[in-house]
Length: 175
Image (cartoon, rainbow, N blue to C red; front, top):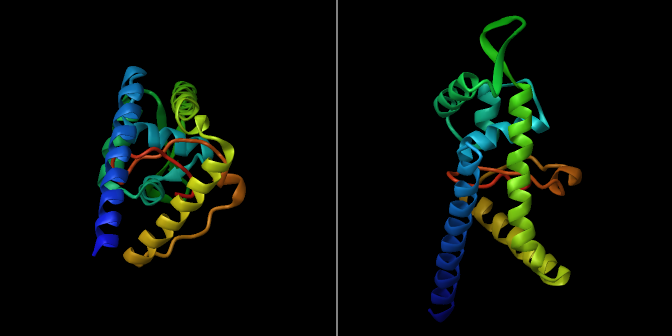
């Protein structure tokens, strides 16, 4: 029973730290005029432009309806543009505009600064140990959810960028 109480204490602590980190990032992104979900879309498009809204929704773990409204607002702000997909009049590919690319890079810089102020201050060996624990927990959560996700290449796993959903999450490839 004591082990369960220890596990619950650590789980709650992890939830609180995650909430606190998300709050800090959300505040910093708001200062540059972005929400976390908008940041997720822009930074995802820096990796692969021309995705459909459906592909974006799947990639960001949100509904197609959520993506539609977010993309509408990003189009209105001239940060992304929709282009018709040849042979499919109902679907559109999403591309960054010049301003959208600049904003995405600014958002990535915000997140990199946060990483420098926090995780980068940990000694390399402790950070490596922490990463192993995070991966172990990730795998346990996937198993508990019975989720089968495709592996992401090592080059992508090493790339620092942002991530949202499940709500207010920072995009971290391979998480």
